[in-house]
Image (cartoon, rainbow, N blue to C red; front, top):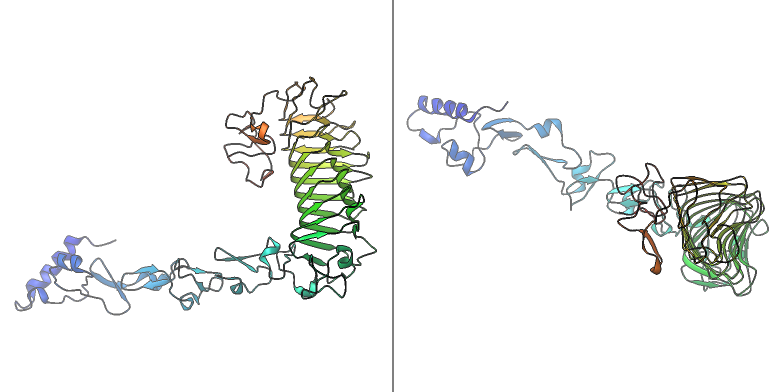
Length: 475
């Protein structure tokens, strides 16, 4: 407990009375201190009365500084003994006692883990982000141009390099890159299985590319597209993949078709854009996982064949005839956060699939005014669960947007009513301008208690009191 000021003044007064008269107000009372003119004036003193080195002045008494005995945290690591407060660092030497945060941030005065990538010694955490080391998330964060799935940057020794101006000769080093994906795949093996494409446009003309067992002996291949675009004028698939592969950050522009994915090995597509294919954007005949894909088509966006299995999280499919179709009863889907609009025929035709789940998906302004049956969604005979989604398909001919064999949970469908679904206009922001975000008065907002952690654009869920229905989570 701090002593009351009157008690201190009384003690000082007593000492002053008992002292020789000549000493008067300049007599130094043992252990008494003051810092600054205001505090010293309260004691009747005209000058600072500092404490011995290593002690702090607290309530006019010299004491051992608490910050020197209890220590200071990394946020303010330096002990100002005279004031008994912890202050910021001015050099990394002030942080040397902190094993994990031994670098001084002059800007904040705190001891941090890093200020630059060079401060991150651990290979598993090569990126400095707001004073802390973390694993890489994007290829651009790595000097080699390739971020591994484990968060460590891939070394150049593990990489086959490509460039739009490269030559298909040699071993495709960074200094002498190759150009063709097929040729690059032929340079891969178990410990050199990453293909890094320099940004630019790769026009393969009439020469389709292949990643298959005939071109690579690597058990798994990673293609880092760096935002490049590849194109073909051939009616054959631009790129055929039938091995365990991951494809990232590419814009694929096809003639007849774009991607053909076959076999039993898993294939992953991340941040892929597919456009301008006449027939099929992505042919799925393998177990395929897609994250953050965008497809703009004249034909079918995704076609499921054989025993193709599709897991899709975050995607936009715009235009074309059909967004997703199944052409084999062994196919299945697990879809979340998909936005589909503007297809001329049934948007999701899964009549020949074995089922699956659709969650937090929006299908808008899609469907045909010809023929019969559902306008926007055709269910498989065995049924399929549609959860927390919007299927809104107006047209000049009044037909339900979905047939009645699917199980609907917390779903909005219409304008023609569908049993098991809510029949309320979802009130998109501006359908005429292809803006299918939810307006402020949409009945889909804050409507459910659970959902994915992000929406189709990567925004966090929920952003209100509860989760929104459909692909969009509005602020």
